[in-house]
Length: 112
Length: 114
Picture (cartoon, each protein chain N blue to C red):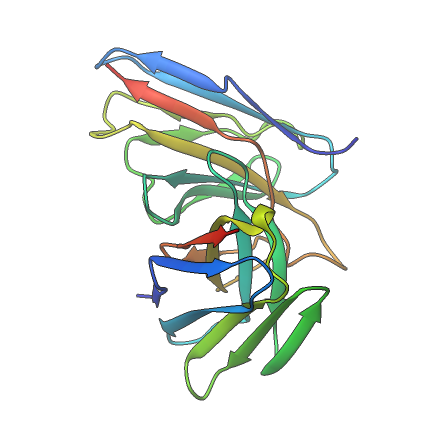
């Protein structure tokens, strides 16, 4: 089976940089995704790493190292609105449907 | 605006009752999904469908059923056989080509069994 490990909680202050790690155990996957979810809301897509290395999208960056079974989400210039849960997910797609296995999520709290 | 509509947003049911959650999308996506989320947990896949009239079990399909009679619709029935149905249910869809690796989620349906 697949399992993903994330820290359950992270706290940082406005303007800071925070890194949310994701380690996984899986026999093979197509990529690693990151989603953001505000309390009681719909998860929204942040980034996808199909290849090893860094992907940058504005204030958010995501990194993947398959050899280390490790990835992370980097959030820069933190804002209060970044307080949310962040989930990593491995993409085990077979066919045209995406088969994602999600981690348990990291609750980020941004303090003023 | 294109998106996914789930209804109802909140639902209460008594033990032993079946309940059906609605999911409609106007994104012209082929694939649709149902996930379950428990407090402090990640999302777990219940069922998914790649195309009309076809669907596959996910990791926790027991006690649930689905249908896919139209491309736009993927309703989920939570049956009385589901032992612990109280949860937040999320419907999602994905397309093909550019952005095919992205799931678009609905706002969710929160089911409480009394």
